[in-house]
Image: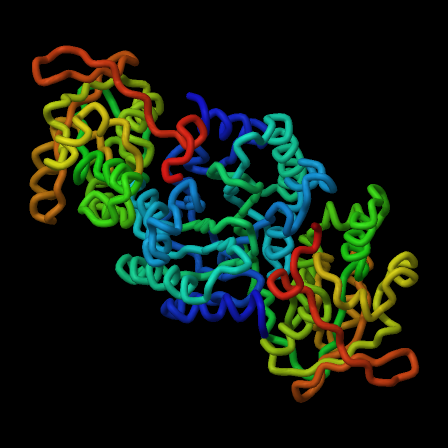
Length: 316
Length: 316
């Protein structure tokens, strides 16, 4: 057993043994049928697109690769169950770094009790990690399409930190709270489950609030009004980016939620009890227009969103 | 809607709409709970590792990316149900080629009635496709670990064609039956389902029979004896490679099966009725030794298997 097979074994040794009928090592993993419906997502992080090996430790990369998938599971209101991990590694990739990837990924996997049930290694010129993750639903899925005019818009956490972190990294900084948010996004799994009891629509903010709100509005067939003054911005983001640039920043991995107004009080109370920070940022409207209002109530044009293909590589 | 989003829509338009609670376009796909257990596999094809864009058409690449995953589902005896597809595309990847990928992949998906339920696009320097596929089991899974001494070894199809196809491509040839087997491997889905009613162990032959038989033997805690004279070799492989080199050739994606001797007749009859070609090539033995016998009954040392990390890039 050498080459690909021993790499797989070393990688797996960082994860708890999955409690499933057949785990890693056969042609497929075998998973017992679930009671609830399954939510499935696949997402990749690629060297020089989503991270550089100068600015990210191997642990950061392993964390981020899983976190972006957990964020999608959270956005549907599902409970993480299992994932498979396909690694494409440069030929000279050091084993020390491979252990780092596994450590970063397994720490987050343990936190969310999601089992690694299978994987694949290939060689490649650039490092990339493609994860497919599955979560189980207890109730109906929290989709993007259930928003109705008048429903209130909430988001978790703060906006723009990941974008500011990227700017810090590009300017040569190596340590700041914003850089931590860029390297170690926090998937809002508990909030997603809680929100699924109240929300009419939800999604995660991966491409920037401006663009992702557009997706939610299109899926729900509604417009939206966002109050710039209500956006949750850290003092650092407020100074360095301002609200309008924070709106366009990607990779926050916060949740965007639409809550029917009659459930808003109960939702806010449940969030407070659970220690989940959410902020009301606007509301859905009739028609298709998406508008931003500045603190004086004037309309502002939304900035373009973050898109890998049209905006280029964020870390180069 | 431009950039990543319109690429996804154009790609999806080649596939039938998945009949699932939530299909592509939300944060996750949502899949109704299954009756039987789920088999899950993930496998990637990477430019200059598993294919070159000179020697493979876009349709070939799309076919192969899905075929290697279907082969894993077949090896467990499961029925293909759904898959997700993560594409990493070079920035200048022509839309014509993207349509070719989708055509090759969707033709095979239709044949096996497997639904594309989600996907992801990222930019990258080299083209790669990572697919995660799931199949449903009607009965117990066909694992690698159930083989016992005395069980008979069978394999489907013919051995070594994919390796010969690679040699043909490397020598500048562009058309031969072997090249077709390299570009368009045939996942043995129907045979896998049939075999799961008879076999004690099974797997697909992706890394060469020599190496994969080793995995089956290790998982089952047995040895094996293979008769070189019984190996199913096409006349072209017999002349160009011979039995020993055919044993080391990867990417055949045939099935290797262990059948208890008392079920062998019934298995062979069922295969004949179903039009599935299988060949008895040896048997499992006590102990851990894996031996090859030449036509005169003499022992032959098995050649090393095919491993991306230790053997390097097959198409360069």
